[in-house]
Length: 77
Image 1: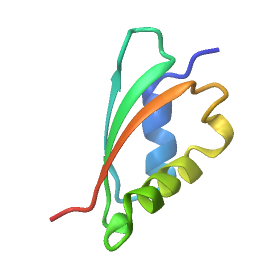
Image 2 (image 1 turned 180 degrees about the vertical axis):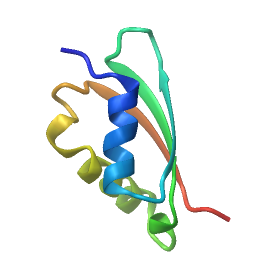
Image 3 (image 1 turned 180 degrees about the horizontal axis):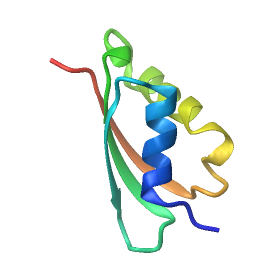
């Protein structure tokens, strides 16, 4: 069963409360998304650490219900 963009956003915002999230369905199949996530929680962290924070927020959905997620993360300026 595909995952809705709103559910991805909800999971990220639940796990990272100050996150600003933009989700794009890349091919219209609700299975391949791009996400831009901005959070102060990323300050001072490497990109790998930032992505790990997002994956943790998504729980066990990555690689399962959520097949592909192109992830871009930023700390606010």
